[in-house]
Image 1 (cartoon, rainbow, N blue to C red):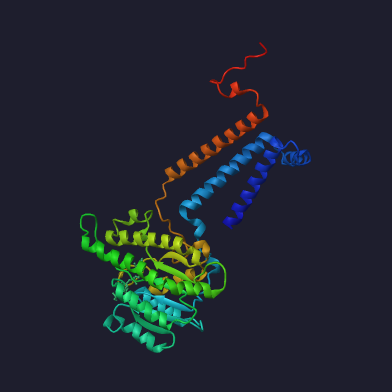
Image 2: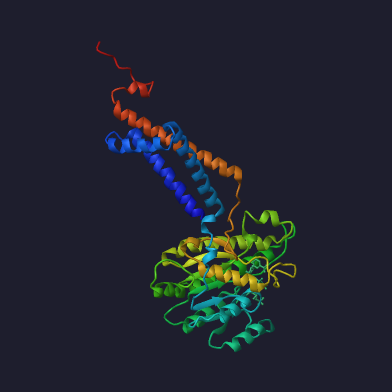
Length: 392
Ligand SMILES: NC(=O)c1ccc[n+]([C@@H]2O[C@H](COP(=O)([O-])OP(=O)(O)OC[C@H]3O[C@@H](n4cnc5c(N)ncnc54)[C@H](OP(=O)(O)O)[C@@H]3O)[C@@H](O)[C@H]2O)c1
């Protein structure tokens, strides 16, 4: 709906600007000029009133456009038409508990016939992976458990080799970077160790995982034979957090003093944006997703959301992604999260600067037109030029 209104505003504004320009400048368009003049008079407004109208629409449109690009509203997923994930070959990290395990569960329950899930975890045989082993036993043809420790580059390489040998010619359609750790702390209490650990698991691990699995994602993108981007074709989904957003975290910092976690997730967000930039030529969709505050070991008991609800939402969002959301950051309901601080004063200043710049350039344009029409009067343009000596 918003886009409809914006498009109508844009069309109306453009039509009026064109009308005024043609009436002022188009000496050879007299027929069109006559028609437009009658049309403008039919609106019951004078030329001046219409000019003000154009300006008002222009300012309103520019404002909405600037607001949208600051808030990232243009990347909002289409919540009404959210589709199920249809990707065939899917890999999830940290799949043995929490949101990762719930994602594997829900993807196994839906009825996608050719689906295969590579559920990775750092200790497939250990006690923390029991629930995943049980699930894999129930669905042996759908789930393969693979060892992958995000802190260990060798295990990432090994896992990619193993998955590669199991993948067919279709490649890997969906890579979900879900594994993550949290560390509490503020400037005064965070240790170098906490910073290194969170960076290793939350940033360096995902970077190496994307790197090692890239050939399989590229294969999937090529094999799909369809243009554009989608999670069913080839995609990297980074499970990030609101805590990694420059605009949202400051107001939550007192309630959640988890500095090492937030700083690492901000790095993870940058990894998402740069992956999106680098992989767009391959038509591999990259984006970050915030699951909400969820009752898991990480989220704790006070969290308002159950893993089921969060994952249902995330899968709906993932299923509906297109190139519109490439490089974006959405929450589990499909709402965009701004990457950076939205400072209203700066928005206004930006607006004024761009208006001043366009006024200046249009004045220069008119000046050039005048110069072309009256080429013999340089002294009117520049007081330093030599005055015309006249007939004497
Ligand atoms: N829960 C929330 O409220 C919330 C909010 C915002 C964002 N998130 C994000 O959502 C993702 C999942 O969180 P969660 O709530 O499910 O957390 P969780 O219950 O603590 O689960 C974390 C998962 O990551 C795995 N993991 C940790 N370090 C690993 C490593 N080095 N290599 C491989 N796997 C590793 C864990 O495996 P082990 O069992 O081996 O430790 C576990 O499977 C995280 O990226 C988190 O930042 C969660």
